[in-house]
Amino acid sequence: MRISELAAASGVAVPTIKYYLREGLLPPGRATSATQASYDESHLQRLRLVRSLVEVGGLPLAKVRAVLDVLADPAPAPYTAVSDALAALPPYVVETPPFVRATSALDEIGLAYDPTSSAIAQLEAALAGLEAAGRPLDAAALGRYAAQIMVIARREVDAVEAQRDPEVPAELADVVEDIVLGTILVEPVILALRRLIHAALFRERHQGDSAAGDQKPAASR
Amino acid sequence: MRISELAAASGVAVPTIKYYLREGLLPPGRATSATQASYDESHLQRLRLVRSLVEVGGLPLAKVRAVLDVLADPAPAPYTAVSDALAALPPYVVETPPFVRATSALDEIGLAYDPTSSAIAQLEAALAGLEAAGRPLDAAALGRYAAQIMVIARREVDAVEAQRDPEVPAELADVVEDIVLGTILVEPVILALRRLIHAALFRERHQGDSAAGDQKPAASR
DNA sequence: GCCATTGGAGAGTAGCACTATCTAATATTG
DNA sequence: CAATATTAGATAGTGCTACTCTCCAATGGC
Image (cartoon, rainbow over all chains, first blue to last red; front, side, top):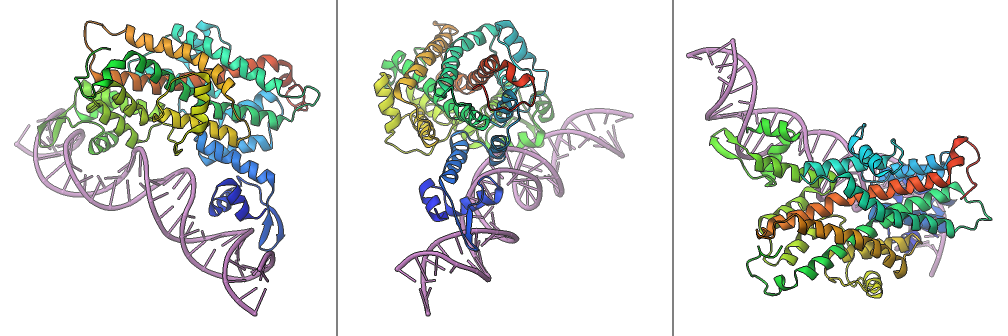
């Protein structure tokens, strides 16, 4: 495959592909002459991965590179490799330990956690943001969220395990890629569903309100 | 309150506050002389709202302005006003109708939706991203997500209703602000919990793997 | 043989969110 | 009341990101 074909197949402009090559986000093609190189399926797949991370996940290229680095050379222990990769995913918070809001709430609801994980910092930042906006979330409410999410998460983890052939030991890079993509690509699905369901419930309860078009809006909530 | 006090109280630098004033994200203070103006609680609260949207929600300032515009002058019909405000929240997708993946899946799982809402476009983009990455999500799986999220969303909607005094008709701007903040600030909580629970489940199943530190990593998944 | 394409590299661009600097007027403090 | 600090308001500049443009010389395909 030549660069123009790779561009056509991926929907990414040739100059952008060249830029990714320069930046090391895409490995160079196999050089067939001084002015020609050929690309294969692996390049197309890598390009799709990069674009997914950027467009769906909203990662800056520097973070994409961090994810790719972990895939290329994962830490030897699975948990560490996965943590490394997940730490490169947004949101990027500046919060510094101790994460009192997050850890005390999690302790209260009895959820085990790794106090150094990036998700703790994210939770802390989110809880702090709610507090700053005057809408604090207490541990009980957090626990109710956690209970529902546990159902979702358990099913997801089971699905990952189920689709693997237990006879074939998985490559760690594949596991990490699965988890990173499962994390980053499914998140917008969950959020979109939440918004859609909110909208459906809201409309259900305000059916009459909008029909008139421009009646005085204050009533009914 | 003088600008320096407002800066101290909010943690936002004076030049940044001036910038927000110029950009119309913050209403001007009450001028007490040619070179002095005084700010009050409402300015502090507005500043906190802006910073929450920017820092926790990750909104660009242009979108913050769109949200504030809706708060200042909401469409007369509640549903329209809320949709307008939610359309300003990320993620910002470029997808154009028809949203076949999203609508056909939602039809199949029997969830009513507004085909013009931004959440539909987000769902379409997310499903397309999963497909591009070779991990398509079918309607059945989507339905299982929706079932759990329905539980969460229903509780959230009930909570909003419960905290309002039914005797006092709500201002539409307040309702919109509630929903916008409830949407944007709670989303990171949900995502952080999902990641934390994934990590907990993952560690549970890989307890031995990481202990040795640098054994060959391929096994066990 | 000849025109389009390519690899490679540097420079340029657009958008965003500030940040710096300046001026003239006013407030505060010793 | 004089000296110092602060302020509103405005313009210009900065740092960063993610491309996008432009060139060049060397092919590749018709």
